[in-house]
Length: 447
Image: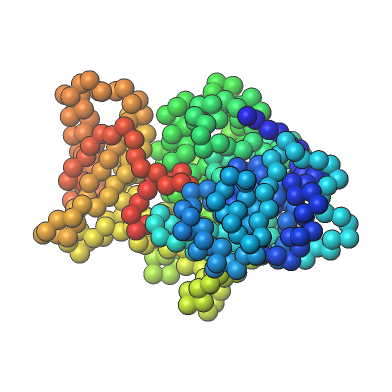
């Protein structure tokens, strides 16, 4: 079932009706089962609730209980079938189709600062709770399109995660339209729906976009702006998007839940200009200070999160106010290139291997859509490098074992020509799918 609601209606609408006053100054956990209910609730609760805890949909019951306890929530917004209705104070959220004008906050509800609590996207264990303000999340976002043209936003991300929330806030602040994704919707149907809605600006992870390129974007889909974030954007995926959307601006952004948005790169090249680090004038103009320390990117800005909640032993920022992103970079000439996450390095006999560096070589072959390089234990070197590869055409060589062997050997040869021997995969296999996180990124152990 599709639902459509104008942002102008959301400002004056309601999902809570006469219960909205009960949420004043409370710490509210949002555990709705759809993005649209969340989108409406956020507008109603900001400036009214003391704290909003934005829960992602894949959380287990144990994780939800831990998050609720850590955030000291005293109200939960959920759906009638959700298990959290046993909470001492819970409100059943109404669906968007029940939105009524004039049922929201009254003018007498004085706005007060609300803490926005986002969850980190770790693959295992309990997520960390990251404290933001609306200013740190949206203060740097434009309120109106600079070019004066109407924008229709969309994103592969869920708006309950940092990447999706950024797009949601961009749309709200500029009174633009927003087309939400649906995790149960086939990719080609979402793309067709985005095309039919006239989406002009759309974002996702590089993995989202590789899958979209495999599916083949609709012929009538011509966005003006295509954005990548959340993972390293290698040259292969940037070139693939340039070929698919020749008139669009292809941009990749660096952002994280803790560091906020660091910068955008709009020149169609992987990595980012060294001037982003070296030019103090650009720091003053953007309000974002960047530096590289121990080969790791550090960011200081008013977009940084404020702190972790419930974990005083782990400050987000160092003594100088910089957030250590954990992303390793290397300077080559006038440009920095991302090499991977600090925790994702493979140690081969004491030598470091960045999985993403090997993947970039494999992905450069036009027959490849994406790959995943990982470690396999070895009694001599401690670990060896192996690779799983998805082809751009899943049917290519499916019933041709000789062809599969040939392309495997050709990809390994390309790695040997471009990489030191310890970085070359000892085995490479063609696969039909790669494991993904709920955020739409490649699943990487310890990354």
